[in-house]
Length: 377
Picture: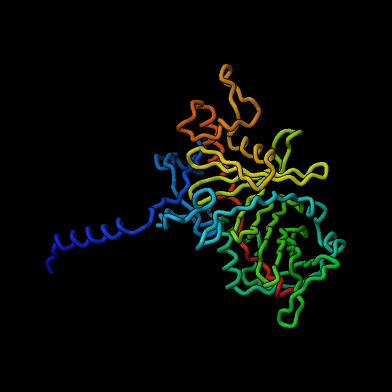
């Protein structure tokens, strides 16, 4: 059958005309990075030209990424530009500064004896093969072996898991669910012990609202019985879904604050700094746009937001010595194409790459627990 090329061209032209006339903007949503260092490309393999190329991807699920382009209505205003990990559908311009997490609440818990002393109750959770596969999908950034190690799956047929459950003592707010009283608006801890080492493997902290919707989930990873890192999926006060990698304390002794990181669809970085020293509870955040523009978020403490901005490269440079001044500078918040100091533009690029690596490597499972508290309570 002969193909009429002119008819195909006409159809393409019509389709393009429709797209051009549509009241939308074409927005590439991606971040650029190169995870291959100059010293090491791939294990046991020679470095190739492909290793030098920058990739342009976004997360579509935890641990999964692909190149993608979105068509959006022109009035679709978002924080940053297009927030990664936030609520799908109708995005909001309101954005809450969420405090960085500390590991203090998990420091003195190592074994099941510690759990007993701290009010945890032993439970048995039965996971179906389908549920285990869904959990593996949540942690798709882990290799199959790493996931098996995380879940201690020595036996592939394992279905019963020994866990430890804790509800805060004296809590009085409950919702009835299938003839059970479920505590809401409080933190419910679920600890999982490595059966071979008899040390805590991880703890997930879950919080339900009065509609029994999970509004906060913290995944705390342990190493040799000690809390190592915490990642969080939560909804802020504006209803935005946030996925946050908490990276602990950085900075000098005088400016040693808790820090956390997020990344948006367009590659924008959010850096939050929290000061809990001397009874203080100060939080501030700043964002680094893909073009190098730094913006202070206004709903937090201004001084802490400036510390976050400095971490992102918004620090002054002495024009004579070309040395960092050690102070926040509003003049340093400009886009990289407008900045005359190469050292600052290179710093912002290095921060961008490092934060992308941290966020991509974090185990942020989303607001769904591995072991469902509704089945354990």
